[in-house]
Image (tube, helix red, strand yellow):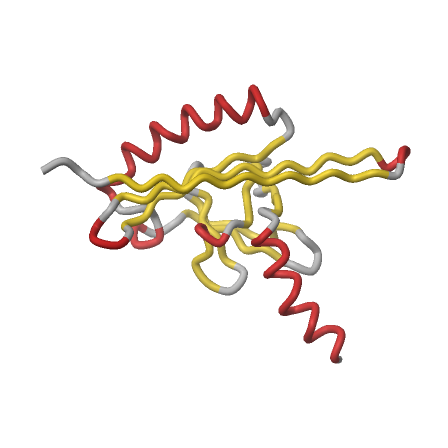
Length: 146
């Protein structure tokens, strides 16, 4: 019971900190990132506009549904987020070929536009007994011109 309780706290923190990867039922790769967390075990994938549930112990997506409007980035940020996403996905494909990219948007302090660009990569070679994991996160804050 103690081990299970500790695992239920430790696994979600580890998966979010390390940008764990999951796969939606239709095959799209998604990141388990704090910026996309909507509630316990629920995460937004802005690229597919879906909310997915993630089992942190099994490290697997257990379901997905279309995101509601209030779960999506603010509409006034979506055009900029989508443009960043197009370029970010191109960058990830060129420089992190086995990586899973994501771009999140939110309003920050004082109404600033905040974009968080993430990529998580997990590579393994079981026959050679190694596993490698990298993650990168960039936060861009911008103010609108008046």
